[in-house]
Image 1 (tube, rainbow, N blue to C red):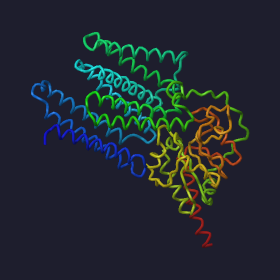
Image 2: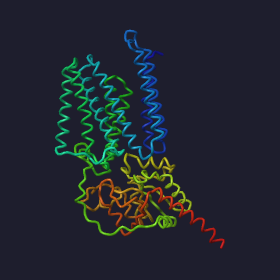
Image 3: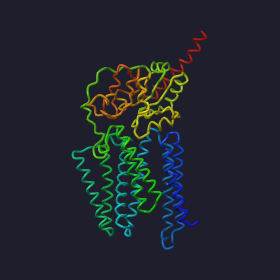
Image 4: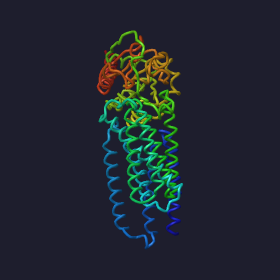
Length: 479
């Protein structure tokens, strides 16, 4: 078998593994296996790239040893850093890690495009245009993802906005197009090098400027959007260098990211144009209506005992559960309820947390069976027949004002129908508002009680209350 044939077969195998792996990621039950398959596909691609060295003609082997050394160093650094951070990252920092890794993908795509621009004197016009597109999209994804990481990690505070923000972004975009046209027109020489540098600076700047105004509540949409950008950039690079695996992987990731962006935007009642061309996340809370009623605190033990004797309990988790790292304690509490004959389900809102699928990942880490997890559309009708709904660290996604209060900035956003349960308990650290900065009418409802405290501590008290109840029963029977 020739080296070239082996490389082509390896690419075919890798493409199949990537597509099939992504298909298996569509279900929590098979997602782990899908990730492994996709990883094997990437390994096949890397090995094939090393086999490609054997097919390099003697005339092109100048400096090959240095390139091999640099490739080995790059692989060692990448594998080492990924393995170290992957094992150490806390579940609360998972969104930051996803944003950062996605940015690295965009940066790699931009680097490939830059290398093609440096040696692209023999490229045709179409290849120049596609290379510039891949370079710009990859650079925007890199810088935008880094800003998203900084926001999620608390290194950047409130959204940064200036008067005429759109005009500023539009000016940078116009400069990006102008520098790209200049590169396309010159294609070589010192002038082209200067224009290429300005082109990349403008692309990186546009990613920063486009992401700085975005509020933290919209980060699931941002992460998904830049994921789509990275996939598109990789696919364009695959076309430029004639690599089918990159084209397939890029198109699959780009299309999946685009569909996910649409789903995230719909889940927040936003149009795609609003996501792309306005300061989505800029919320005017002054227009929200007045909420009547009062907050009614409850003890953790009382809430636990009420759930122990309920017939059906639905749990709506949110970012507060992740922040408290209380998923293990929650599942311990759930198992106690199930042992007592209580039907327990989890209601998962698409944008609960800080990234797409955050709650699914969080509960999977605790070992919660996948068949207990239900999406919004699957479970919303069941709240009316539910004895008790338990909300843990969720706010905006359970706010009934989204249904009725037209002056509310979250009006029209699909929410979990928690307020329709017979009784509601909300575990919340304090009386603060959610990420959207909107007061939650649910907390003031007649059938809602607030259990204040860190979710880890509150759930520990609930577990202890149920256990104490079980220990007391045999003693009463003996007496």
